[in-house]
Image 1 (spheres, rainbow, N blue to C red):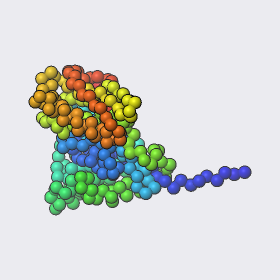
Image 2: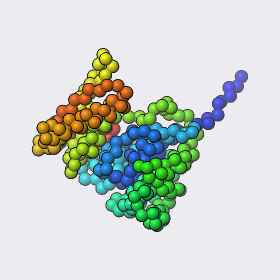
Image 3: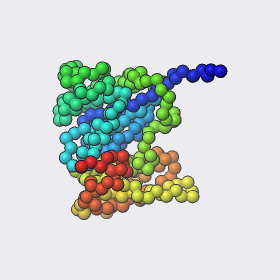
Image 4: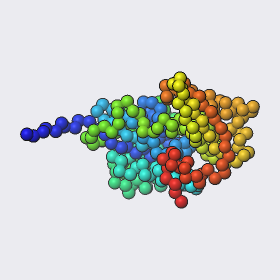
Length: 304
């Protein structure tokens, strides 16, 4: 008696999204997924850990790895973020390099392209933010990028407006191998709700605080209590490096931390679909950037 194998008709695979800080990688991930799964702010280096967003196009399931921006690292945290970015590209079916079309080949971008040139994975180039750049320069920029590394396809998009995203999504789906799906159809990310809650509060630090403080701060969810009425109580620490930074986080009469808490609580409640009680505490820890437990909590390797 022979058993006939059912042919696989679905596609699934990993797509690594890499680029310099503030190129629009997280915005693109959210646009491809169709819902927010990665935090976004106008400031650079918003993404700190490798995060998988899950997008569906027809019969294809795309595992989109939103990596930290690649830049010249100075601190231990910087080195861990850059390592996570390159690790995220390892063994991907496709690597998507996102470049801010307005900024062009500035900063770390030429070095990133040079590194990609030596990688075996298929590479696509995405020139983002075309809605705010000089259109006449786009073809020249694409040509210069292709001279540094051979890209199989080049896309001109605006992740924030959605222009060109549908075409990119279809092209990515077509490149994936035949494979069963790795996640349920309704799952949008592999991040835990606890991590997403932490990230949503950290997003508010980026959006509401100015200057350098967001880069000298992190958020840790220390307690998660399920209540009988179906709500959840979440206790989070905003960890800063110096006592003098407390006043910035607190704001006049505590107004800033109240606003951070109110907005984050609403976003977490929307994520969970239930009532949330959010309690924020400020903690000074000068050496938090050397705390192994904080690295493992967000999926980063502790590097020397």
